[in-house]
Image 1 (cartoon, one colour):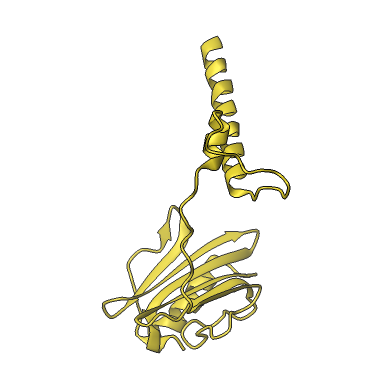
Image 2 (image 1 turned 90 degrees about the vertical axis):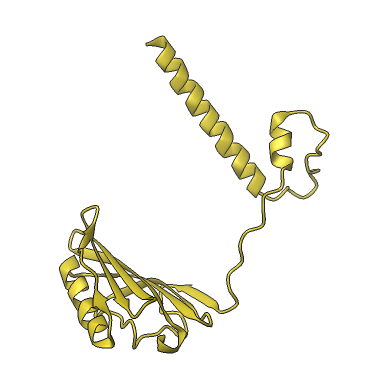
Length: 175
């Protein structure tokens, strides 16, 4: 039992040290403090001196917002369910396929959310793909043509459904 206790303590200590190093690597150096030099011999100094690869930048056509529909959100394609509250939304007006994202909540059962969006998408030519859940959570996929897709996922808790919609559609149909 002692061996397991030591391994667990060592593992927790290693995880804490790794988290501290990652945080230090992402934090700016306080003004007036010299940045660690590569000549420092401590392992911590070597870790914090390493340069992380640059983050990918968003497309200039991408916009996102919290608490509202982003400007230009294609409401004809993906109407907001009545009584729903937008948590976040995004829209990337790429030249070939536009990418649309929406996270919202509504005081309704998950089945009502799936039914609303099925009725909104099918008249636009989207066909529901067989399957209604992933890992026990309501999830529905729709396809139109060869490359347009919409995914709807819903999590219901205490009568409130939080739903996420992700769509990749022809840029011309994202209106």
